[in-house]
Image 1: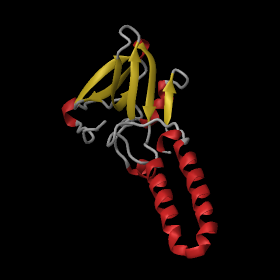
Image 2 (image 1 turned 120 degrees about the vertical axis):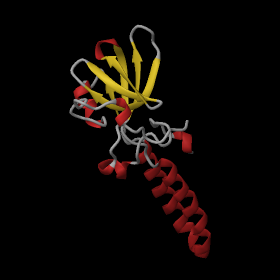
Image 3 (image 1 turned 180 degrees about the horizontal axis):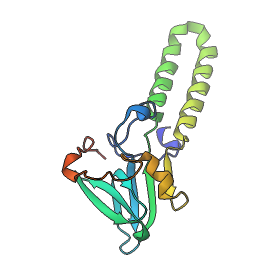
Image 4 (image 1 turned 60 degrees about the vertical axis):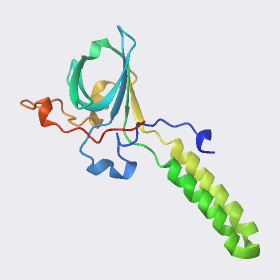
Length: 164
């Protein structure tokens, strides 16, 4: 049931859950493809200027020219479909405690739980380039206005190391 719904996920620990977005000080997870090599590059989205983007990979900041990027996706948050699925299964099992009334409560719990899980898994949690410009994507960078003057890469702490 968990894999029945498509979703875009970042590595665990690389982005916050949806409720923590307003207090999270880090950038979204950026996945991009470079024109010349077709290599996939991933890391925390630090900033975007008019002609370049900054991405943190393994604690180091890399700079890429926007003109060399063929595709990019910034993942803003990971959804909670797994948690909703667990609550649906647990709630379904607990309807046994309703005795004979479980024939009424089980379908209600299953329908509402499945609908909630599917709705959460379809929640849009990413933006793509080139369908959106980097100006739009940069809203989810650590520094949305661009890389500040005088900031060194050594001044920035990476988010906890993500796990795949």
